[in-house]
Image (cartoon, rainbow over all chains, first blue to last red; front, side):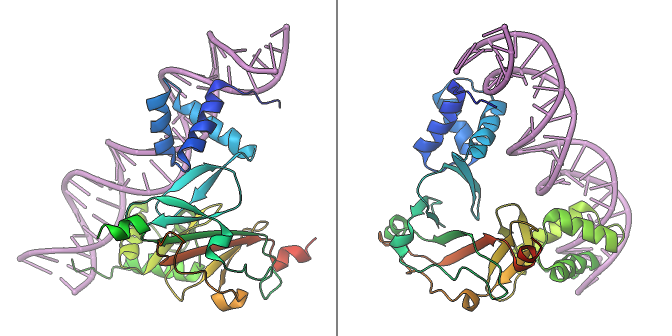
Length: 126
Length: 126
DNA sequence: CTATGTGCAAAGTGTTTGCAAATTT
DNA sequence: AAATTTGCAAACACTTTGCACATAG
Protein backbone atom coordinates (compact mmCIF):
# COMPACT_ATOMS: atom_id res chain seq x y z
CA UNK A 1 0.00 0.00 0.00
CA UNK A 2 1.49 3.26 -1.13
CA UNK A 3 0.54 6.02 1.24
CA UNK A 4 -0.19 9.48 -0.04
CA UNK A 5 0.89 12.68 1.48
CA UNK A 6 -2.44 14.39 1.60
CA UNK A 7 -3.06 17.81 2.94
CA UNK A 8 -5.16 16.47 5.76
CA UNK A 9 -2.51 13.97 6.81
CA UNK A 10 0.12 16.68 6.91
CA UNK A 11 -2.13 18.87 8.98
CA UNK A 12 -2.67 16.13 11.55
CA UNK A 13 1.03 15.46 11.82
CA UNK A 14 2.11 19.07 11.91
CA UNK A 15 -0.52 19.99 14.46
CA UNK A 16 0.73 17.29 16.77
CA UNK A 17 4.26 18.42 16.21
CA UNK A 18 3.24 21.95 17.06
CA UNK A 19 1.22 21.01 20.11
CA UNK A 20 3.83 18.66 21.52
CA UNK A 21 1.26 16.50 23.25
CA UNK A 22 -2.44 16.45 22.60
CA UNK A 23 -5.44 14.41 23.57
CA UNK A 24 -7.72 13.61 20.66
CA UNK A 25 -10.05 16.28 21.98
CA UNK A 26 -7.37 18.97 22.00
CA UNK A 27 -6.01 17.91 18.67
CA UNK A 28 -9.43 18.01 17.07
CA UNK A 29 -10.17 21.41 18.56
CA UNK A 30 -6.85 22.79 17.39
CA UNK A 31 -7.28 21.50 13.87
CA UNK A 32 -10.82 22.73 13.59
CA UNK A 33 -9.89 26.16 14.83
CA UNK A 34 -6.90 26.50 12.55
CA UNK A 35 -7.81 24.69 9.38
CA UNK A 36 -11.28 24.71 8.05
CA UNK A 37 -13.29 21.57 7.86
CA UNK A 38 -11.32 18.42 8.23
CA UNK A 39 -13.77 15.74 9.18
CA UNK A 40 -13.42 13.85 12.43
CA UNK A 41 -13.25 10.55 10.59
CA UNK A 42 -10.27 11.81 8.63
CA UNK A 43 -8.46 12.94 11.74
CA UNK A 44 -8.95 9.59 13.42
CA UNK A 45 -8.01 7.68 10.30
CA UNK A 46 -4.85 9.69 9.90
CA UNK A 47 -3.85 9.18 13.51
CA UNK A 48 -4.13 5.47 12.84
CA UNK A 49 -2.11 5.65 9.66
CA UNK A 50 0.58 7.73 11.34
CA UNK A 51 0.75 5.33 14.26
CA UNK A 52 1.12 2.38 11.91
CA UNK A 53 3.92 4.19 10.17
CA UNK A 54 5.52 4.80 13.56
CA UNK A 55 5.48 8.53 13.09
CA UNK A 56 3.08 9.14 15.94
CA UNK A 57 2.33 7.31 19.13
CA UNK A 58 -0.24 7.34 21.87
CA UNK A 59 0.94 7.83 25.42
CA UNK A 60 -1.29 6.68 28.24
CA UNK A 61 -1.03 8.99 31.19
CA UNK A 62 -2.97 8.93 34.40
CA UNK A 63 -5.52 11.55 33.51
CA UNK A 64 -5.74 11.17 29.78
CA UNK A 65 -4.23 9.63 26.71
CA UNK A 66 -2.21 11.90 24.46
CA UNK A 67 -0.71 11.60 21.03
CA UNK A 68 2.76 12.80 20.16
CA UNK A 69 5.07 12.65 17.18
CA UNK A 70 7.83 10.15 17.64
CA UNK A 71 11.14 11.75 18.45
CA UNK A 72 14.06 10.99 20.72
CA UNK A 73 13.31 8.46 23.45
CA UNK A 74 11.98 10.16 26.55
CA UNK A 75 9.66 9.94 29.52
CA UNK A 76 6.88 12.21 30.71
CA UNK A 77 6.32 14.44 33.66
CA UNK A 78 2.76 15.56 34.34
CA UNK A 79 1.90 18.40 36.69
CA UNK A 80 -0.90 17.43 39.01
CA UNK A 81 -1.99 21.00 39.27
CA UNK A 82 -1.93 22.51 35.80
CA UNK A 83 -1.79 19.28 33.84
CA UNK A 84 1.16 20.40 31.77
CA UNK A 85 3.12 17.56 30.24
CA UNK A 86 6.89 17.87 29.97
CA UNK A 87 9.27 15.57 28.16
CA UNK A 88 12.01 14.24 30.39
CA UNK A 89 15.21 12.92 28.90
CA UNK A 90 16.76 9.93 30.66
CA UNK A 91 19.92 11.82 31.52
CA UNK A 92 17.99 14.63 33.15
CA UNK A 93 16.90 12.49 36.05
CA UNK A 94 20.11 10.54 35.95
CA UNK A 95 19.07 7.09 36.92
CA UNK A 96 20.32 3.82 35.72
CA UNK A 97 17.95 1.54 33.96
CA UNK A 98 16.96 -1.57 35.78
CA UNK A 99 18.25 -4.98 34.91
CA UNK A 100 17.23 -6.35 31.60
CA UNK A 101 15.63 -9.38 33.14
CA UNK A 102 13.25 -10.19 35.90
CA UNK A 103 14.34 -12.86 38.29
CA UNK A 104 12.30 -15.49 36.47
CA UNK A 105 14.18 -14.76 33.25
CA UNK A 106 11.57 -12.58 31.57
CA UNK A 107 13.31 -10.12 29.30
CA UNK A 108 12.68 -6.42 29.62
CA UNK A 109 12.75 -4.83 26.19
CA UNK A 110 10.91 -1.61 26.69
CA UNK A 111 10.30 0.88 29.46
CA UNK A 112 7.48 3.32 29.98
CA UNK A 113 7.98 5.79 32.75
CA UNK A 114 5.75 8.58 33.89
CA UNK A 115 6.34 11.00 36.71
CA UNK A 116 3.76 13.08 38.50
CA UNK A 117 4.12 16.05 40.81
CA UNK A 118 3.79 19.78 41.05
CA UNK A 119 5.71 21.67 38.43
CA UNK A 120 8.03 24.52 39.18
CA UNK A 121 5.64 27.17 37.93
CA UNK A 122 2.75 25.92 40.05
CA UNK A 123 5.03 25.75 43.11
CA UNK A 124 5.85 29.43 42.67
CA UNK A 125 2.23 30.42 42.60
CA UNK A 126 1.42 29.31 46.13
CA UNK B 1 -21.75 9.63 53.04
CA UNK B 2 -21.78 6.32 54.84
CA UNK B 3 -20.93 3.56 52.41
CA UNK B 4 -22.61 0.23 52.65
CA UNK B 5 -21.02 -3.10 52.31
CA UNK B 6 -23.36 -4.58 49.76
CA UNK B 7 -23.04 -7.98 48.30
CA UNK B 8 -22.39 -6.57 44.85
CA UNK B 9 -19.61 -4.32 46.10
CA UNK B 10 -17.90 -7.21 47.83
CA UNK B 11 -18.14 -9.29 44.71
CA UNK B 12 -16.50 -6.59 42.61
CA UNK B 13 -13.66 -6.19 45.10
CA UNK B 14 -13.11 -9.87 45.69
CA UNK B 15 -13.19 -10.66 42.00
CA UNK B 16 -10.47 -8.13 41.37
CA UNK B 17 -8.49 -9.51 44.24
CA UNK B 18 -8.84 -12.98 42.81
CA UNK B 19 -8.02 -11.99 39.26
CA UNK B 20 -5.02 -9.88 40.18
CA UNK B 21 -5.43 -7.58 37.21
CA UNK B 22 -8.47 -7.25 35.03
CA UNK B 23 -9.70 -5.02 32.29
CA UNK B 24 -13.31 -3.96 32.73
CA UNK B 25 -14.20 -6.48 30.08
CA UNK B 26 -12.51 -9.37 31.87
CA UNK B 27 -13.86 -8.33 35.21
CA UNK B 28 -17.39 -8.14 33.87
CA UNK B 29 -17.09 -11.50 32.20
CA UNK B 30 -15.70 -13.08 35.35
CA UNK B 31 -18.43 -11.68 37.54
CA UNK B 32 -21.18 -12.61 35.18
CA UNK B 33 -19.90 -16.15 34.87
CA UNK B 34 -19.46 -16.63 38.57
CA UNK B 35 -22.24 -14.69 40.19
CA UNK B 36 -25.59 -14.42 38.58
CA UNK B 37 -26.93 -11.14 37.43
CA UNK B 38 -25.05 -8.15 38.66
CA UNK B 39 -25.87 -5.33 36.32
CA UNK B 40 -23.17 -3.57 34.37
CA UNK B 41 -24.12 -0.24 35.89
CA UNK B 42 -23.54 -1.67 39.34
CA UNK B 43 -20.14 -3.01 38.43
CA UNK B 44 -19.04 0.33 37.00
CA UNK B 45 -20.47 2.25 39.92
CA UNK B 46 -18.70 0.04 42.40
CA UNK B 47 -15.40 0.37 40.62
CA UNK B 48 -15.81 4.11 41.01
CA UNK B 49 -16.70 3.87 44.66
CA UNK B 50 -13.78 1.56 45.35
CA UNK B 51 -11.40 3.85 43.51
CA UNK B 52 -12.60 6.84 45.50
CA UNK B 53 -12.02 4.88 48.66
CA UNK B 54 -8.53 4.05 47.41
CA UNK B 55 -9.17 0.36 47.59
CA UNK B 56 -8.84 -0.16 43.87
CA UNK B 57 -6.95 1.63 41.16
CA UNK B 58 -6.80 1.71 37.42
CA UNK B 59 -3.47 1.03 35.74
CA UNK B 60 -2.97 2.27 32.22
CA UNK B 61 -0.85 -0.13 30.25
CA UNK B 62 0.06 -0.01 26.62
CA UNK B 63 -2.55 -2.39 25.33
CA UNK B 64 -5.32 -1.91 27.81
CA UNK B 65 -6.31 -0.42 31.12
CA UNK B 66 -6.65 -2.78 34.03
CA UNK B 67 -8.02 -2.49 37.53
CA UNK B 68 -6.31 -3.92 40.58
CA UNK B 69 -6.80 -3.86 44.30
CA UNK B 70 -4.37 -1.57 46.03
CA UNK B 71 -1.56 -3.40 47.75
CA UNK B 72 2.16 -2.92 48.22
CA UNK B 73 3.75 -0.42 45.86
CA UNK B 74 4.90 -2.09 42.69
CA UNK B 75 5.37 -1.79 38.95
CA UNK B 76 4.13 -3.88 36.07
CA UNK B 77 5.66 -6.15 33.52
CA UNK B 78 3.58 -7.03 30.48
CA UNK B 79 4.44 -9.86 28.12
CA UNK B 80 4.15 -8.76 24.54
CA UNK B 81 3.33 -12.25 23.47
CA UNK B 82 0.82 -13.69 25.93
CA UNK B 83 -0.23 -10.44 27.51
CA UNK B 84 0.31 -11.68 31.02
CA UNK B 85 0.80 -8.95 33.58
CA UNK B 86 3.24 -9.50 36.43
CA UNK B 87 3.78 -7.33 39.45
CA UNK B 88 7.36 -6.25 39.85
CA UNK B 89 8.66 -5.12 43.21
CA UNK B 90 11.20 -2.28 43.12
CA UNK B 91 13.93 -4.39 44.70
CA UNK B 92 13.52 -7.12 42.12
CA UNK B 93 14.92 -5.00 39.35
CA UNK B 94 17.23 -3.21 41.73
CA UNK B 95 17.34 0.27 40.37
CA UNK B 96 17.55 3.47 42.22
CA UNK B 97 14.79 5.96 41.83
CA UNK B 98 15.61 9.05 39.90
CA UNK B 99 16.14 12.39 41.53
CA UNK B 100 13.16 13.91 43.17
CA UNK B 101 13.32 17.01 41.03
CA UNK B 102 13.64 17.90 37.42
CA UNK B 103 16.28 20.41 36.58
CA UNK B 104 13.74 23.22 36.50
CA UNK B 105 12.74 22.48 40.08
CA UNK B 106 9.56 20.53 39.36
CA UNK B 107 9.02 18.02 42.14
CA UNK B 108 8.54 14.36 41.37
CA UNK B 109 6.06 12.88 43.81
CA UNK B 110 4.89 9.78 42.07
CA UNK B 111 6.25 7.25 39.62
CA UNK B 112 4.50 4.97 37.22
CA UNK B 113 6.69 2.40 35.58
CA UNK B 114 5.80 -0.28 33.13
CA UNK B 115 8.05 -2.79 31.47
CA UNK B 116 7.37 -4.73 28.33
CA UNK B 117 9.06 -7.76 26.85
CA UNK B 118 8.76 -11.48 26.32
CA UNK B 119 8.14 -13.42 29.48
CA UNK B 120 10.10 -16.45 30.50
CA UNK B 121 7.35 -18.87 29.61
CA UNK B 122 6.91 -17.51 26.11
CA UNK B 123 10.68 -17.57 25.56
CA UNK B 124 10.71 -21.30 26.34
CA UNK B 125 8.06 -22.04 23.79
CA UNK B 126 10.07 -20.95 20.77
C1' DC C 1 -5.85 6.06 -14.78
C1' DT C 2 -6.03 3.76 -10.40
C1' DA C 3 -5.39 3.18 -5.77
C1' DT C 4 -5.72 5.73 -1.79
C1' DG C 5 -8.03 9.10 0.89
C1' DT C 6 -12.04 12.10 2.14
C1' DG C 7 -16.62 13.60 3.94
C1' DC C 8 -20.85 12.41 5.44
C1' DA C 9 -24.09 10.07 8.10
C1' DA C 10 -25.03 5.97 10.29
C1' DA C 11 -23.54 2.39 13.35
C1' DG C 12 -20.82 0.73 17.05
C1' DT C 13 -18.60 0.47 21.61
C1' DG C 14 -18.03 1.01 26.31
C1' DT C 15 -19.60 3.80 30.07
C1' DT C 16 -22.78 6.77 32.58
C1' DT C 17 -27.31 8.44 34.17
C1' DG C 18 -32.32 9.01 35.84
C1' DC C 19 -35.61 6.84 38.18
C1' DA C 20 -38.42 3.67 40.88
C1' DA C 21 -37.83 -0.26 43.67
C1' DA C 22 -34.86 -2.80 46.94
C1' DT C 23 -31.61 -3.10 50.63
C1' DT C 24 -28.36 -1.91 54.32
C1' DT C 25 -27.67 0.16 58.58
C1' DA D 1 -37.16 4.88 58.79
C1' DA D 2 -33.63 7.03 56.10
C1' DA D 3 -29.97 7.02 53.21
C1' DT D 4 -27.61 4.35 49.99
C1' DT D 5 -27.53 1.09 46.32
C1' DT D 6 -29.48 -1.56 42.65
C1' DG D 7 -31.41 -2.83 37.97
C1' DC D 8 -33.23 -1.33 33.92
C1' DA D 9 -33.32 1.22 29.87
C1' DA D 10 -32.19 5.26 27.82
C1' DA D 11 -28.62 8.52 26.99
C1' DC D 12 -23.91 9.56 26.14
C1' DA D 13 -19.36 10.43 24.26
C1' DC D 14 -16.06 8.99 21.43
C1' DT D 15 -14.55 6.31 17.63
C1' DT D 16 -15.23 3.51 13.56
C1' DT D 17 -17.44 2.15 9.23
C1' DG D 18 -19.73 1.99 4.48
C1' DC D 19 -20.20 4.28 0.57
C1' DA D 20 -19.93 7.58 -3.21
C1' DC D 21 -17.03 11.11 -4.66
C1' DA D 22 -12.38 13.40 -4.87
C1' DT D 23 -7.52 13.41 -5.50
C1' DA D 24 -2.40 12.22 -5.35
C1' DG D 25 0.88 10.00 -7.80
